Length: 66
Image (cartoon, rainbow, N blue to C red; front, side, top):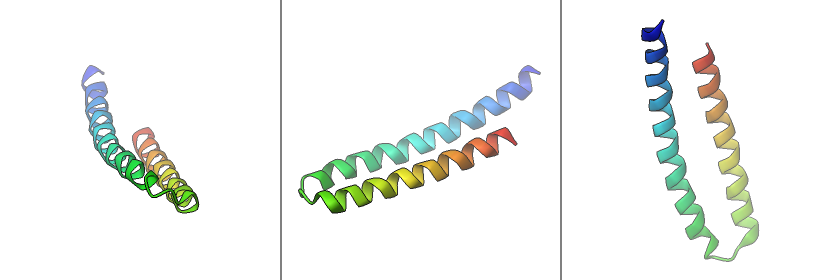
């Protein structure tokens, strides 16, 4: 039982690390975009990033659940 938990925990940790590195990079890019003062374009990029985050999170969650 502990071995099975350990395998899932390693998988979860790996996915979490990869996603956090991706979204940390995107966060910094969004901060640089904010200096342009084009609010409409910034909001469009923000919505796109949120959509991608939901898709990746849902896919990872479903994958771990299955």
